Length: 401
Image 1 (cartoon, helix red, strand yellow):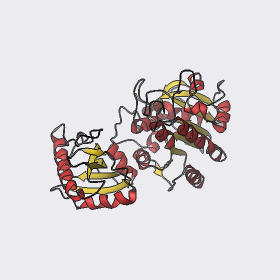
Image 2: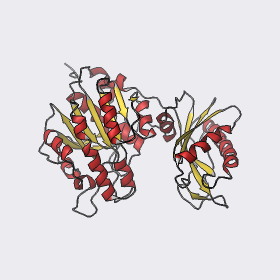
Image 3: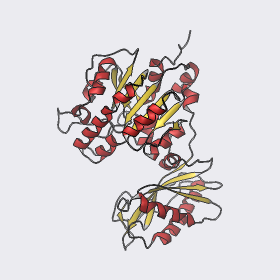
Image 4: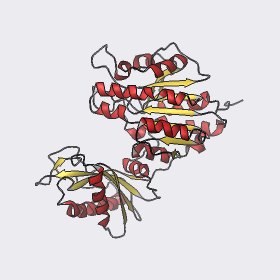
């Protein structure tokens, strides 16, 4: 029996409000043994104040020792077993920009890149070409035609765009063409079964035509294909938790994740301050709010300890605007750790704060990794966070007689 079997049976409705504030990549490491992490270094008076009234713990996104991508990390926070529900990056990008995938579609996250005269990649992201330059090029690629397959091309942001292939018999077990290195040529699309080989051939046709259409571009003269994925099927938040849920995010991928689990993506926020405005405007319409903050992750990936610390303080500064609305349950955590020392996602458990009007508090006084290790929630799998949220919101009935 999985957790959703129980939540389907036990959830009940009331007027409570739950807020999940996700600092992407929130967890970190000290720069030297015995030092402080980014979160512990940051001034976080608002989260510390809630720590005194709440309970801390450390969540494990997938399994101990496994470093998750953003997709599995968020699915765990949303209460979905990230090993059971596998979602490719292409599907996330497509749904994130509002493209409605149909059964049988295959979605691809594509990156513009720069090839040198020898056909090797000199820049995997085409110099991070700005969106105003890349979008017209993505639209130009709509000229590509593949017999028997409908091709959709949509701009996303900077060097990224989405391709969706629609046709009979397409499967998604196709290898990426990005070699994750410069000085070497792009890889050739290869399918790992018969249905996927049909998709791989369509990808080869797409790339051949794209090369011709882009060959005179100074930066974006080719593209690579990543995260080739069919439309996933996940039960909705309403179905498994009885919640009408809203997502307030800036980046397309996180909007896509939210849509895939049945959340409404609300507002057009570009900053954390905008997101707080959207939260207030929609407060009476929803039971659950997922608020995503990207920059604790991107600064960690840049290896910039000081910048991640400052972004953590920015995250803390929004907390009073959330709390003044009167949530019944407030959770702050991350989808994974991104220590600046490693400049990458890592396997380390993620600091988690749960505040509720009826939670059992622990002796912890500040929100940080060391305190979370001795917190009352202990170390727990992230997929159980939603059942904790429901229980603390009074939205779970008793199990058994």
